[in-house]
Image 1 (cartoon, rainbow, N blue to C red):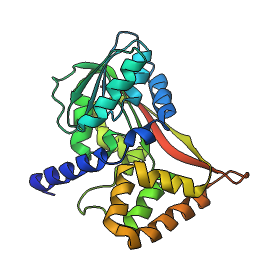
Image 2: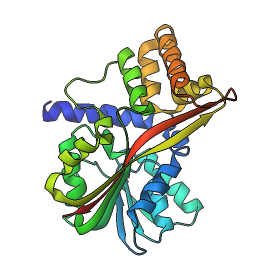
Image 3: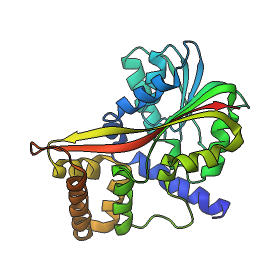
Length: 269
């Protein structure tokens, strides 16, 4: 894919993530950020960069540890929400607009770099991995949480993609949830790498309620339904309900959906 095509794709992605209400989804998965930040074992006073921070889950978790946090994203509305949340908890964070593929910081600027289901969506994976490591000091920590290809969210993306195919020429974001791919992307830029497969559990009153929630709030599914229109959206809705049914472990009529993610904690070489 050419540079011009990549820029066009990122502009489209920005509009997608700005649509709906990603904060409503991010609020559900905040425990993933707490889990990842605790695994990173950050020190109070550390300079931490949250890449593709969204509405600030990892930033807030790091700020609770006494870290000096800079939250970055390329969607201004998401950062505004992060700022509101941090202010409500009296947690000092700095917010700056930045692209995960072109971070505006010098080499080794931060003690730690974190990203929770954020940087994984940047279209150029190699460039993103290079930037995450470049801005982290030698001996510093890089921590990520990424949805896996074979978990519920990975299957949800494939389910949506069968109805609304993704752009050709780019690798799927859930490849960041594969240990082999993560090691390939980081290469010798990192030393020690600790990888653990974890589960986050979505809980809804019914499979239909999950489909309704993600159709309304989550940009990628919202845009897919818009592209399909009223008639074409019904099969996708049914697909999502059926998918929840396959993963559902609840026995009381509600929906309990284990969703696998890969937690990565690496040391910058």
